[in-house]
Amino acid sequence: MKLPMSTKCFSLLAAAFLFVRPAAGQPVTVLSPNGGESFAVGETLHVRWMTDTNVVFNVNIEMSVDSGDNFYKISNGSIQIVDPEWGDYAWVVPDSLGGAPTVSSRCFINIYDYFGRSRSDLSDAVFSIIAVRPPPVPDPVRKSGCGSGAIVALIPPMLLTAGGRLRRRRHGASSP
Image (cartoon, rainbow, N blue to C red; front, side):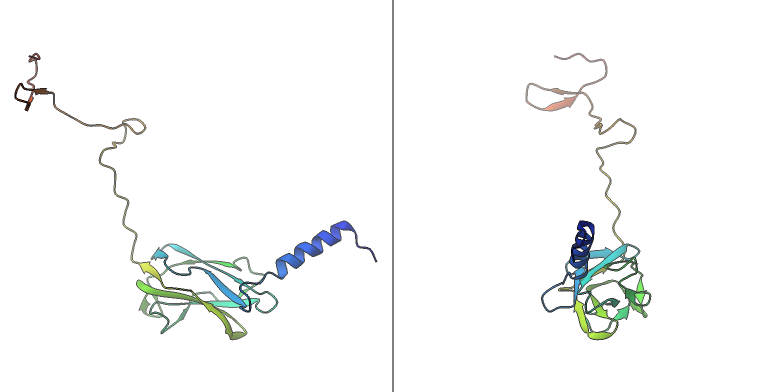
């Protein structure tokens, strides 16, 4: 039986989508945060992962703030392959989890198969949660209302004396 071209294209596309595998032999792979990142309390942290969808199609996400000694669930229930947040779970970082403060430089994400905790992946290295991001430091040279990027500097009129010294020029005085 010969399939129409549109059916073949759909089948190839579906096969490519459904059979993407993370790492060889690993049914779940944490993509981010995966170590070295820094997030602030109140910011949205995007937990990203991929799975072998032939094996894992329902996950839970948990976080540790103490190098993996304790984990706290951060996903609201399990996340299924049909959910819009599959592969990219947006989570607003709270100031505590299960009574433990989230501010830490020893954080890990663990994503595991809802039906088998042995199918899981942990961040490759620690990441940090900080209390708040410091506000940007204003540039003292730029002044608002002076046009785009105008640099304002108030320098009093000066004269170079015969001895090579600068002296302030008085209002109305003429140059030597």
